[in-house]
Image (cartoon, each protein chain N blue to C red):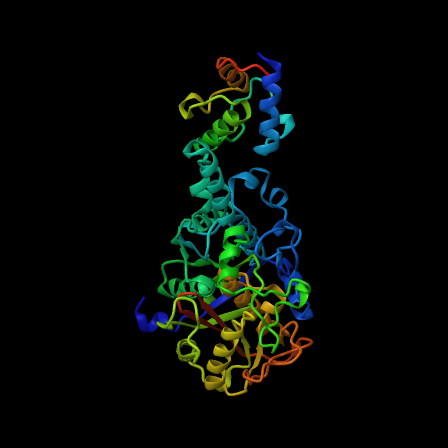
Amino acid sequence: MAAAQAAGVEIGVTGLGLVTPAGIGREENWARVCSGVSTAAADESLAGEAIEFSCRVPGFDPAAELGPESVWRLDRFVQLAMVATRKAIADAALDKSTWDSARVGVILGNSLGGTATFEAQHKRFIAGGARRVSPLLIPMSMMNMVAGYVAIDIGAKGPNLVTATACASGATAIGAARDLLRSGVVDIVLTGATESALSGAVLAGLSQMGALSKRKDDPGAASRPFDVDRDGFVPGEGAAVLVLERVSDAKARGADVFAKISGYAASADAYHATAPDPTGAGAERAIRAALSDAGLAPGDIDHVNAHGTSTPQGDVAEARALRRVFGEGPAVTSTKGVTGHTLGAAGAIEAAYTVLAVREGAAPPTANLGKVDSEVGLDVVAGEARRMPIKAATSNSFGFGGHNAVLVVTAA
Amino acid sequence: MDQNIYDRIGTLLTTRFGVQQHELSPEVTLENLRFDSLALLEFALAIEESFGTPIDAEELSPVHTLESTVELVAAKGVTV
């Protein structure tokens, strides 16, 4: 397919699988996100760790969902993705018995891999030497294994990879999936991201960086993007998987197209390992490039699902970028107020929420937004979901390393 | 066959490896219990830790039955 021709190919989202702190399944997630009530809570499994509250997937039962062997064979970040993928396929009403499996790709994002497995095995290594280390350590903890295991589970034999751009990994994966579909070498891509890295050493590292909220006496109020009293993010876990197809193919099989992935762009801050460029210049370039890729102008964007992690520096840098591109225009939300920061999964979870915002005609509220930081200067949705027609929206994702990835989602 | 060793291996399989109680019998092979090469290595490690006797990876194969697994452990001089 010629490049000019490929660029015009419309790519649609036909299924969503969500396994997040806001619940398991599309409808449960959307209801919780629109409620604006945070999921952050005290986490008994983190007793004695550097942070003792988090945003966990509620009621996730891998044995019931995936069989008892999944409990000891798979790290939780793979379990979450596998369930999300199954739900996405069901949501899209895809029939695995009739698809051309060699033309089904899997592109998932992840940031940290199976850290709980790694840390547990490292303790065994220190205590007992090499002979005590599980032979499952490597297949359970490597990041790429999630795409491999998902392919095995669903029989997807097309291109298969994991993207790693830290907290932008999910958006990067979806952008890569869109481009792969446009190239014509696949018919379907299961794309999204997963993360479950709520393990002691990882949390200690994040805490030592000063990235985490210290609001231990009131965890439910700790994740408060753009609020004047924010003090860091609340770590979370989760997975989201989207089914992407060419819109022409989706219509031919009678599938419901939720929304289109119409634009994608990425940039690098090239500024600092972990601090965002305070001017937001890198983010701005990615946003403008994504709009250009979609053939849209800033005034066409009705809603922004911001990266907004609830850190003092990050939210302001993003706000500066958004103000320069959009002025005060679109209704801005950070759904991390509800979900916490699911790290490598965040870009995919938020892309899914952006798809739902476009489809449902509602911008979800930012949880815990009492008083907007005076340096933000944006129309941040607070309190309750704002019913409004949304023809086009963007989802921003930024990661340690200076990765910026922006998706443009438009109405089907 | 040493019944005590058999019971303890059965408990390992049901509590650690997701095997159902009704799947256990002296004749069932590890292959029938869905053990692939990696799982066999993990199982060998679990037996080694449970019984405190070294089991080398090559000593266990997919065609081992539970009974022959018990005999392998018993041959190490393990008494329960």
